[in-house]
Length: 148
Image (cartoon, rainbow, N blue to C red; front, side, top):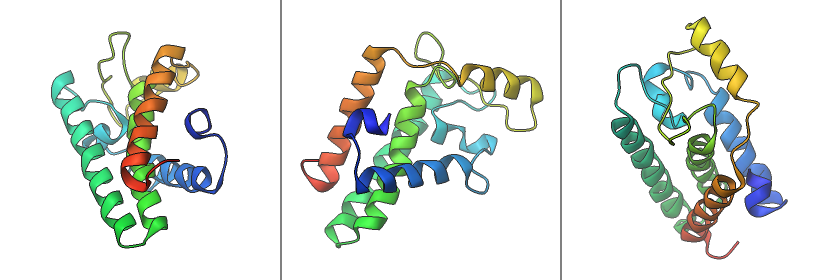
């Protein structure tokens, strides 16, 4: 998705690294961090989960803008990559249902849920969803650094 939105380049490499860390870092898959993956905790409403995800994105973008203003491009890219990870997961059929609602995440120890999640990971978002997500990420990048 990052290449779809931005092509290739040094920033894309840094953004991919940050997105990978958001997905694979210590504790990143804990149930209470479901919102960072565009998902809901068990028994959490879709609106509550979506709100937490969007607040995380907003806070990450604010931190990225502050770091960029201080001249810390690497730090800004790390924060931006964390926000992009959530945006991309919100576009993933493995993370959202056919209505765009966050799917429930029961954690890595919920084997049945994990199997379903892994099976859905091969699905790709529609072109419409890809385009909308790419535009959302380009707007966020511009809000931090100016034009890509």
